[in-house]
Image (cartoon, rainbow, N blue to C red; front, top):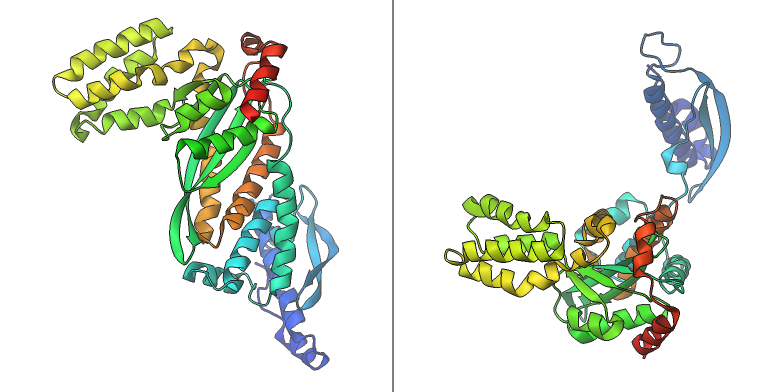
Length: 401
């Protein structure tokens, strides 16, 4: 095993030179790197065992600029493979945004105990208001360039999902909705096309957001997939003249809320019979038949099924190759988890701008990752959804008005 003791005698000799703290920091980071490498190799320095994966191969020098000054580090090299210490990796935009939000809340005096602890643990307590402003400005420029970018081509499918966050407003803590918009174009690629923050879900709220997407060039929308948000359905018709698909996953949860837990498995199995049918006509027939069977025992459930039948089966009017991805907002599930993971670190956001900064940075990075992946949807079936050019232009002008 490597010697994990700090060379205190050598460090103390430097104390008179004013370098004691810097030398301690260098020694601690060096110990961390040696421990990391020992774990990768599977053996300590000069140790012989059957679990060893490779051997050391010297060091390379690297400077790390800190508030203590420039730390001179020696990064271990390996004969096979490579090692780079995680604390030297360049921070992602989302990580910088998270730090900026934490700093902004702390400096503004509106931080929670959790944020206070993070500030101390991350060594951020010495930062000035001007430094925070500069960091925020740099991130905001990148995030807004991404969120306000023009959109080209046709986007037949649009997914909308809401994540609820807490924000300080006028001395109170309020719940606000962060609406994330993802669309798929006729090339089969998906992109994050928008983010909207608000505390209301009335039609006006949705219309403002959808019109902003249309002004940036979002056109050719045929189907919008979302949960049953108040006012959204009317806004979709008004702005895009598109069909609405009610998220099937959320629909199922709503339906089962009318049934006792002990019988939910049986009812869910019956409801799913409608969703395995090959076309809209057979699915409607099956759903009505199931509703009639359940009506006597659960009249409210049957009424719910009657009212929502058209909306939950809308995806069946679209190409079969796409249906698995357009019947619900599940394609956004991983994205929402990442958003919540970052937001939970902050807890309560100091203002709306800080929400856009952090969530926007997460969305920017995820969108970049998506562009490196294969097509999300089969492109051949997209030909059925292309709108004639003259019709598209007329709809785009009307939507932006």
